[in-house]
Image 1: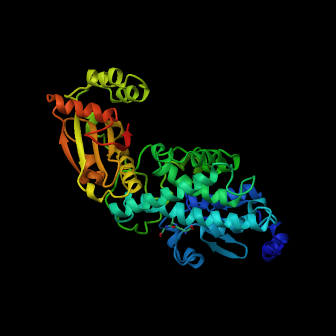
Image 2 (image 1 turned 30 degrees about the horizontal axis):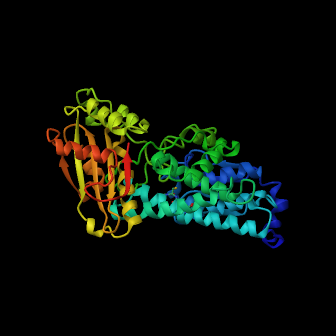
Image 3 (image 1 turned 120 degrees about the vertical axis):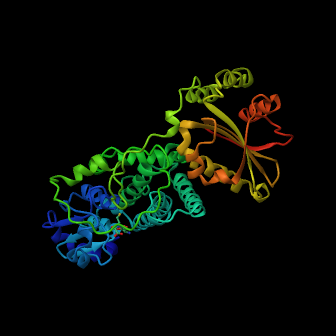
Length: 439
Ligand SMILES: N[C@@H](CCC(=O)N[C@@H](CS)C(=O)NCC(=O)O)C(=O)O
């Protein structure tokens, strides 16, 4: 350990006059800047967020480019010169205090902290950004690239979940720099794109995340973090942001305090302008229906016995063919479903991407067969008499299925609906590998 600290123990004396001289250049909602600000809280040093920072203006000025030639934030101005790259900045801040517990208490803990910092950056943050950035229009949106990002992210979160099953912190028995960096990265994910339906697969990660963001030193910087309600719909690609005319300076006395309020609202990645209020979904303008979808979802979830008599009967009692429509879907490429977990992941991915329709849809997806190739068939109920346009436009999986409207005057089709709702086995003569519900 001594060796590790030797390189910067010379700074110890400097620490005394360091407490007011570190200036962090970044906007007040930048999760990468939060890493250093939280580390500063734990370290007991003062890092000041620069006043009147203007994304696209301040970071393109000649003075800024001298500090960081790539023109990105954050940059920390120190008495010995600037530092860029947020992890390096956070490390620097942590090292302002000799033997800082943020860096563990042994060589192996130090190595594990570095290990998790890399994991948080390469496996978690990189994949969240690969998923999120194209969706908000800052990169080209390519469905297969999104699918790859989501499955890489899930793989990483699964590993993290396993690690956290028996641990409160990533390393040792108190908060370390690894927790700070991991939590800041997860904060972007949780507040922008990782809705509850996605994160509930990783209960230990959820517990860890909410524990961390509620630690007083995190809360002071992050404020209240709210989980995204759904995956943001794909926006058309934006042009790279042009340097703007310098805006009138804003009066911001306490930038870190301001960050508190805005973390869940303001894009931290590129700090673009606040999104315009969303137009109402046309489905909200349909004539009211006697069927309340949430009531059906509750009945479905709460019926544990006599499913036919209670849930299925209840479904047909409440079903309103004027306000809703029922659809069978049939995967077009079943012969590709040769590996069970890949097929299951494919269906889970579809359900995740349907998140945007949660208010307006209910679905059952059956993965059928005891041997490959597995068949994937489903039943969906949508608000309105057709499949909503925004679902077809924004969920690319839709075109991977053949969609057939259920004719509810046909008893055989109604019986098929019943069997799909209740995961009837055998289904069309075959065993079920799995059944997934979207509700
Ligand atoms: N790896 C860098 C990422 C820096 C980064 O991408 N910064 C974004 C804002 S979060 C930025 O400054 N973008 C402006 C630009 O690309 O010109 C770090 O962790 O500091």
